[in-house]
Length: 420
Image 1 (cartoon, rainbow, N blue to C red):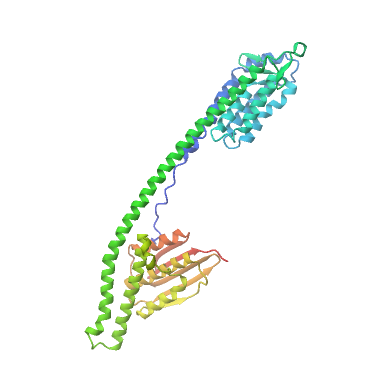
Image 2 (tube, rainbow, N blue to C red):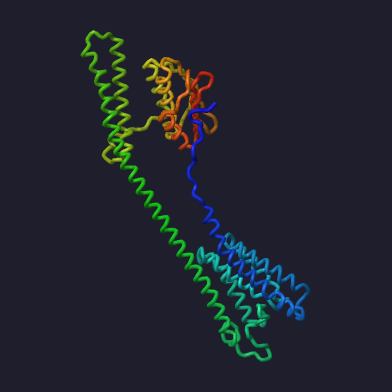
């Protein structure tokens, strides 16, 4: 059976994160494609040269292939785990003591990782930058060859027989400009990437600030409209409710022949009207959010006030049977339970006058709730009271349902509570 409160509702709008997620992969994919192309172009020329080098052990093709896979994988891993990406890309260089050469694309992969991570900050780019500078230093300080598309290339360091005195960091004076060129190139790539990333972060921060400002304007406009509606509500409702109270209080004087029972009923009506005016003033104070309404505010009702609410309903002639207890209930949950019982009793008086109402209060591990039942002949569209009650319940992570079953209207409310 379709219920009044169980109809599907549109969930909260979730911002689309797809474009941002894929945008993060643009730089890694571009760098991986460039390094992959650099790995494939010189493969044949390099391997022809490598086959005749006596320093090589068997399987140079496997070294080039596995090293290339490690370099590309490191680039793709750079965004999430820069340290692991750096270690993975550095692993082929561990074979330098046995090979005496390395593929220059491996070094380019280290620089690519430094560039990718610098987009998110210099701290993340520290490890790959230091690794790239270290490789350049080893290359310029030894006779190790780098395999380029044009063939094997050394830094220009002289052999020990014709070596010159070292001048800087243990480097031959001839290769110092080479190392400086590598150092400048690495730092330039990292610096440009960091600048691009900073610009993107600044643009994102500016966009977020503009969105926050727009939301603040919407909230401010809603608050002004809410204050206007609060004033209208007070002017209209308070006028009529106060008329009810005044007429109920003045009736015994205008009609002296009224018996004691009628006078008691009129006094109760006047008391209920005055109580309604008090609650209306509290709602008005909350809606207006004005500092000068603090004196009109009072503590909100809670779970402990439900007994008084039921007693008032009974004194007004409504048949209410209550079972169960809650014990100690937090203020937020107690307020929602109070309003739910109030709404359920009001609906029963409105749609099933004179019918008995059964109220069950229950508490289980981590949950408090109510079940309120009364006879009902037909279903109707959910009113604002039921919809507002469900919103209060769902705000606290609970669930509410209202349905008609076998001629009975059943209102269920469940709220989570933190047990002491």
